[in-house]
Image: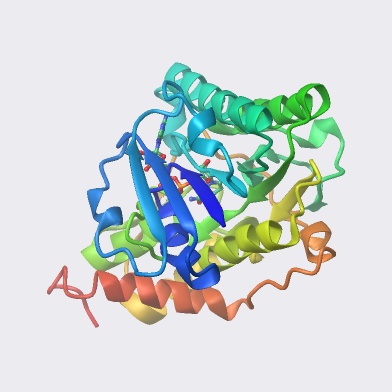
Length: 317
Ligand SMILES: NC(=O)c1ccc[n+]([C@@H]2O[C@H](COP(=O)([O-])OP(=O)(O)OC[C@H]3O[C@@H](n4cnc5c(N)ncnc54)[C@H](O)[C@@H]3O)[C@@H](O)[C@H]2O)c1
């Protein structure tokens, strides 16, 4: 078994590369990252049981086909991922993310290797209370340059599927919760944990406190990728992948249980809208996948808070 992971040192990738030897003993794991975000520690203490190879480089510039040759799956994670921050560097996000996906998809098509592509549930901005993958075009209203580009990338893969026989699955992931060696703290759950532990006010977008949004447990994300690989489910479809829909308020309650009390500060952001919606995951479940329960939020928050546990002695325990 050979698996190639682009953007391998990031939040999701650094966990995936550690799980692969357990899931597929003896596998070859090729990791590509250009250190857009410097996360050398993601390569520390990799477990035994896999043949690892790290390639430092930009997927837009690398000669990918020889690297992909003979692989069972390419997991494409390389991207600039800060949605809220993407208003400030719109052109760069559009250029890097679109072209990274284009180059990866073209190399997959050329070598006949299936591609696992991660989109985002933030492509939805719907008026509906519950939205699924078959929603009309009008329900797809990405709220940031990052999410707009994801939608363009999805369309690109569809086109390459039709024109060049690219096999892929597109999974629209909810916001990840759960710790990993390469994790960042710019997405909702992680950021709130960080702020709570550091004694900072927890900054919540003004409209967001009671709005439902989709979230995905990191363990479920890894299991979903392996599920698709093991069952060879590269049907060129789009699937929502999320552990739960929840409000920010629910997340803050979970954090309070582990990090103690904190102040909430409401902030403005270009990304917010007035709409509360839930995202359906039944299409992915119908393939036979079983998601973790809602208690995974408590588990993940406890884990993240524990990692930072001794970083702020002023924190009320
Ligand atoms: N984390 C989430 O909540 C979430 C939710 C939905 C979708 N996603 C998507 O999942 C994927 C992975 O997310 P993540 O949270 O692990 O992101 P991340 O920012 O933690 O990691 C991305 C990695 O890609 C690398 N990278 C960026 N551009 C590159 C390039 N041109 N060539 C090589 N490497 C490059 C970075 O150095 C980084 O290590 C992204 O496509 C993201 O949009 C993430």
